[in-house]
Length: 456
Image 1: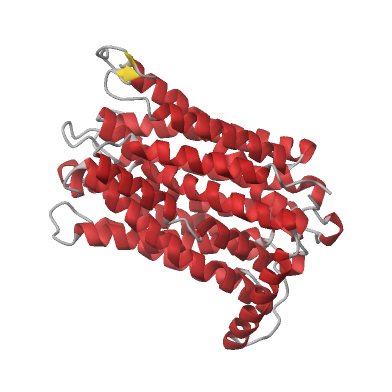
Image 2: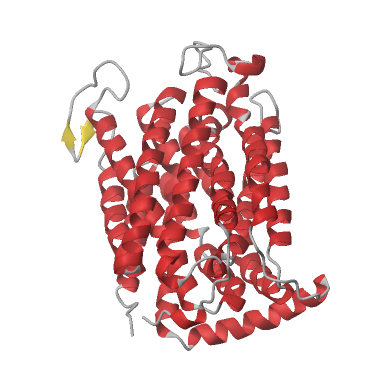
């Protein structure tokens, strides 16, 4: 694989500029941790949907719809951002939309007849905004670090994201979200601000909380991190030039076999990751009947291993290259999904384990599920961090926006497919175990494509 190291020319950036860029991941992650995976998604399944199977299916359809929109928008906006020069205005607009749509989740109350459409529409719009903002943020990488430090920068960013998710989840579980039956938080106290556990106000509050967290921590990026100089092009001209550049980018990519194989692999494993994170908390709630306490502790454990994995993965990336890190991560994820499919109440790996004992994660299948979740956390961060460092090393900095837009398109062009197949398989089979089996194939095919991404 050719990484075009000479094309990357970082500018002089102070410590404040680097840390401000890293804070972007910290600022955005609570939406993914609290809304997409561990709190709001399980709340949607348990309190808003008619049953867990329908809830997983509806959540999958909303995720798929967001993926379709992202597939269309990301490469066009990335190319337009290159044409306009500066990336920060695009990040600011995306973050504003993300904050507003996240806050709207508060209105998805169990007593509201519009709760389901509000939840699904707000979630889909917020997902689109978060991913679009990431395209422009990733395009700034080549200005901040040289090729030899790209893996560490990317891995540290993902670690910051996991740490932000961990801290926000701990705060939510100990201070905000309460068990509707006991009315108490994880610490055994009443939730802050007089939130009503019976109305699931703590679960809904994660939307406004994520919005405030984003606004609180994203602003240093706009103050301290240097941006490319603006080209002075009007918005309409930038969009027209962006479309022209997009056509040129696709033509250029087709002439680079390593890039084509990488984009196809990215398409497959990003599809699978979207489904894996969208349904992780849902699976625990639906199969094992986990409530806020179990799901919260599971999320905390997963983000701890995720933080460590991202840091270690970034250093492995700089030492051995992005490709080995990606291949190793895919192998672990395929194993995890295959193993999860064997779990159920009273069984693990097709063996009858008997009833569980008292306490948290009291059964053998639950303990196995927790262990597999820790593996997901340990490798998901390195997989995604190495994906963006591989591309950042391989393209010119001035054209990074359009290539990262293309990367986002490859990750979203069929991102509806894995959630859609999981939702359809779940609905047809009537079992949540159908979902993980679908994802094994996605990770396996992605690994086969990455084997052909060779260093020239």
